[in-house]
Length: 357
Image 1 (cartoon, rainbow, N blue to C red):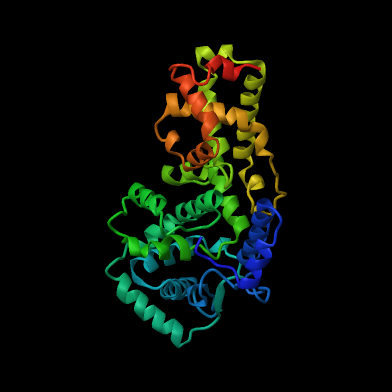
Image 2 (image 1 turned 90 degrees about the horizontal axis):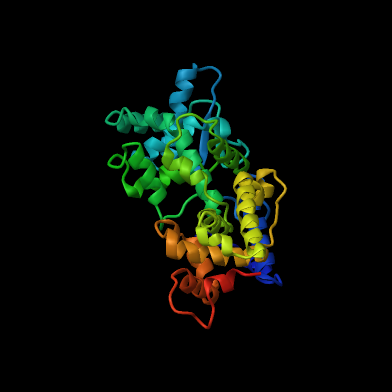
């Protein structure tokens, strides 16, 4: 994440006695920044985004709904920086406007002024050559919001400029790859939805997982079903463990490790069903956070990780979370890998030896 804390705030984080406490302190400050809106605490950044990019609500009671809509879209087009990304983004903002918390990252207009008039001129001049963009992205607004929720669930931020594969996948699925240049992604996929509070973002992600929001692309749904940040290794290993239990040789494993593998699969099911509650930002989602002692699942995860490396392979073995777990437990995983490959004994250890009680 590119965001940097104020020096004193970073010193407070660094003073924590354990890495877990550092993570908790960092999350607490990020939560404050994410949720504070206009009522921010001194010394804490007011927002991730500049005020010029804030969502604009236009509501002049003397004008018709259609005219209010025109001014609001125009002002948001300008607020997002114009261009193809700004045009698409203003469509998204109109499509998800009910999710915004108007006390955070919002500018409100109740009457026409010079700024609003200038915005309409700029908007209509550019939109004339791209008439389909705004209505298209208004219709796809929940896909954009859902994708942001999926990324935040997995990575604890809405946007990673170094990895735009999720955005490219959605654009490809929607047939828009050539319509939105990569330099415009930030306007469409980050700035447009940033004013949505985290609780709303998580509710949308969960609703997509449950299938209660229509018109969601598979490119978004699949990512919404990812494990919450910090649990990708459990999720990856549990997926391999399910296939492992179907192997003929699994019956030779000891009762303890079979029980441990069952527990690994069960806890993964619980995590995936309640991802928001296991997430470090659970309090921001208005949920009580559930913590987990991952060490108790370590042996089962090692067993499953080695099985994935030898027998499953594919995209699962390329999982970043699995690679990190593998590097942290390399020696034991190598023993299991050698045993699964049925090669010569490694230090006198066979698969059955590793799996016995």
